[in-house]
Amino acid sequence: MTSIAHRSFSTSGRVTVVALLCALWWAAYTHLTAFADRLLPLTGLSRGTHAGEAVHFFLYDTPKVLLLLTGVVFVMGVIQTFFAPERTRALLSGHRAGIGNVLAASLGVVTPFCSCSAVPLFIGFLSAGIPLGVTLSFLIAAPMVNEVALVLLFGLFGWQVAALYLGLGLSVAVVSGVVIGRLGMERHLEDWVQAILNGQAARWDGDGMDWSQRIAAGTAHVRTIVGKVWPYILAGIGLGALIHGYVPEDFLASFMGRDVWWAVPAATLLGVPMYTNAAGVIPVVQALIGKGAALGTVLAFMMSVIALSAPEMIILRKALKPPLIATFVGVVASGILLVGYVFNWLL
Image 1: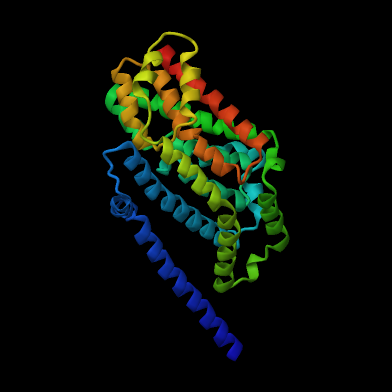
Image 2 (image 1 turned 90 degrees about the horizontal axis):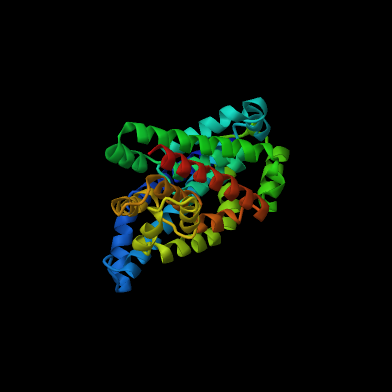
């Protein structure tokens, strides 16, 4: 009787603590801008300068990504106690892989994340047993096909152009995920990720768990994954902050309006070392178009900035080995080039 009462108290106590932490998480996540605004003056900088904008970006994006990573990994850790990894993989692999990729890419479209913010969800999905190719479809679509860009294109060029952008972006995400999934590159996941996946298969016994044990599983998931990834998140966002706000618009416009074959590849390459979210890159896109740059070339630049950023690669490096990152970059870049050339050809 005492054991049962203690177990009930332990479960209710953990649930109460988790509920309080969720409330604090939500309060922190919804006040990130105010947090960065209040901290920035302490540095002696203002947002009217390049340095001030970079520091503000770092103060905003760092807690945002860490909060997302912690929240998503915890939720996925709890969810996976209800579903065996083998069952999840069976549902989204094999002959259903294409459907899984479409669903993952569609989820990416409706989630307002930049590339670095999408990485926590990617890691959480992967650790829950969802196939690599399916998770990559989400990772590609989340930053690449976004509502801000769709609204801009709709307002500037009409629904046909916006629909074309949506269709091509989704196609790139789905096809890229399917291709990488068919290549069987799971062996190029980092050892600690593979250990998590193998450990899940060996330890899973969700049917006999109470909520106290499920919460403990989610907490252990956070310690394992966040403890491994957070230094890379700081490094990636730090790099993004350094280059944020320093986009050389005049230089970019000088060749983006040229009718030459290499303009689209050059714009794609120039976008990789830069980093911002969709809302941040839209003013640059508007400025470039206003200066006569070709729409397809500008879109290739935008998609490269938000889907193939160097900070994203730094964060992904903790979970993916170089051959897999190189394959990811190559496949996505090919899709971006296709989008750029198609838009330049049609418009």
